[in-house]
Image 1 (cartoon, helix red, strand yellow):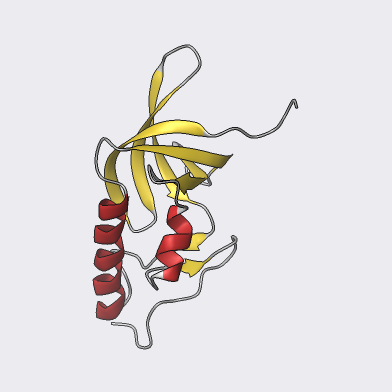
Image 2: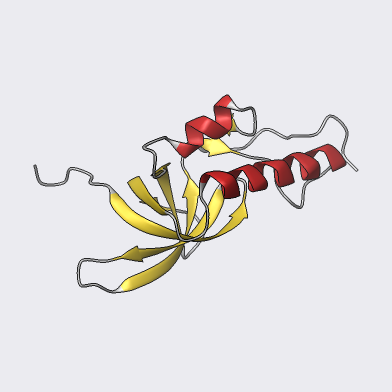
Length: 127
């Protein structure tokens, strides 16, 4: 049906943080574009966080995402939308084993469900 979303394959280049990675996406004309992909519906701590606990948690989330999405692995991007930052997209990410990466991060306690808007902080006390 016209307008239905389809999964788009992408090759993981490198991990940016716990919920963002760089990927090469092949377009219909065989052109490959590099984009940053923010995983939809999940928020992980920030690497430049406001407290030591947040920074530590951010590195744990980033390392786990690197395990889930190794360099050169192929993932499927679904429900792709433009992000608020130029050159970045938001997408549900399905790994090579068919698993929703955002749901894994949430289930493992490395991220929280996020549907837009203001994000809750990760610190009990700021530094």
